[in-house]
Length: 96
Image 1 (cartoon, rainbow, N blue to C red):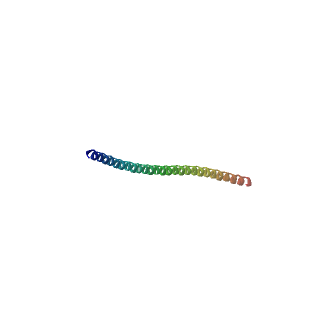
Image 2: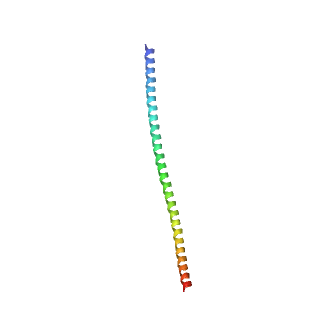
Image 3: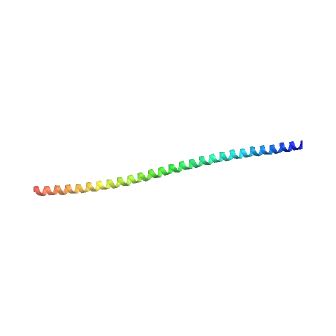
């Protein structure tokens, strides 16, 4: 009888330990899931920030290029206007 009680007590301890261990494993799994989700969210946020930064760089580059093209066209226009004035003066001189 005493042996049976000891065996029962031992089995109860083992069952209690297994229950505790199962709960610990569940807690660890749940915590790991939360950490993975937080890591995913952080990565997604960083990807978004990188995309915005790259878009801003591209926009700045395009603005710089457009500004250079406008300057080039303005210089060409000024040059052509000056040549037209010179040609007009030359025609007037030749006609006179």
